[in-house]
Length: 309
Figure 1: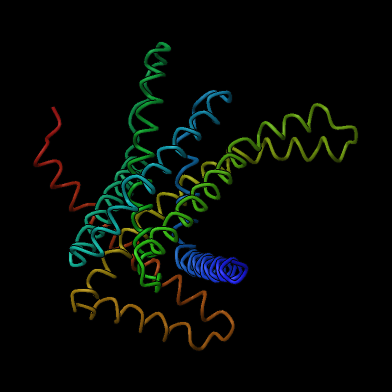
Figure 2: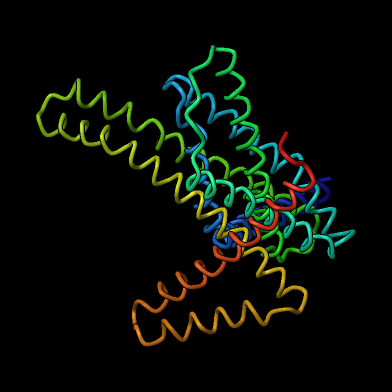
């Protein structure tokens, strides 16, 4: 009896060690994948604040919460099972789907560039019902854009995962999806509410230095939000073009991306410590220019398929 009980305890200890080892492996895989997706996470954080520009302060956090919830659903309900199914059943479909998503990002970026160069006439202020429609449209647009960025994050995560079991892959994808969503939209919330914090400091600060800091934050936020919107526009073109370049390599058409990287490396090589920065800038610029060209083509196709009425 005692020996049977001891054997049971030994089995439990063995199972516990295996489970702990699996959790450690999941954590390590998630950390490795998180590093791979860092660039897109930054892009996501840069893109999102522009969706709350123009709304009343009390609507900013609710809008961010809606977008964050949509982002979490994108990653966990749609992209996670989709990524697992594609990796198991149709791995050949991953690259063309990512390239289609990249084309959408390029189109969105091109539309922003076009709007910046050809601004529409300012519309008269509408009723509260119209504001509600605009908010819903903004949230829907943000979630659509997030879907593409999230798809790229999940695809890169899946590519970085080396664990063989389906459950471990699902856990890694889930952990990365949740952590990325919390990190991105937590940062976005801090960014868009910084002006409120500045007003509080300017009005309630006990010392002149604190009040001056608050005034500086308030004055800086409109500039920061415009800058983030501009960075977000560039990010969509950069990421979209980069997806296409990566897709070309996947299909054995790596001459163009290899030539770009070789030129970037050669240009940066003589610059010593700055070589990595210069190489990255040239690679990113080339991807952005390609993204702008792809966006222009997609916009022409859209105009032909669904002409404005």
